[in-house]
Image (cartoon, rainbow, N blue to C red):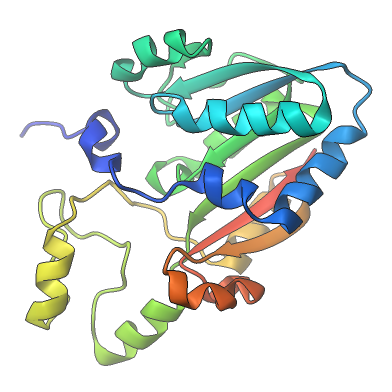
Length: 247
């Protein structure tokens, strides 16, 4: 049987949610992040983006933070795919190819900022992974982590009807299994499985992070269905959940 490496298929991420822009467009989240970073006495910050892909979002966030903080930021990125390397190098990103199911981040107390956007649900050994993140983060540094919410408002409607929860996968080839009604099944078939193997809720994510020594500074929700963004005041109802955490 051929081994399928989801993360190496760049087309799986085209058209996906842009967490970099969604987080920076939320003044409350961005203000919380910059308030913490402003307390750093360093004039140059180090930022690592885990799952950086081609680095476009990484550069976008870096530029916004540099403008607000009036500090230079040195940018690092890691991804499982070597296809990202050339683009990252062009964007002046120090790129590392790592499989974070097996590889530890080769740093200790090094980064002021680490972002982990829609990555942890792809990781099998999540404890091993998050311990590596903790080790690489400076004391007083921040990490921003987002993932998909298993108990989002959509899934609270679907599951009681016996329908497969969105953003969960039972096949590496077809995303349409379990949706019962043809209109939903056909809609889901437009997307490709991305390798979601770990499912989180707001509370399980918080428990997991606290058990691994992090302090949760902010909990937030991201709703990418425009007409339901009022739910962002209720994070555990949103399609995606996130936390700002400190060491």
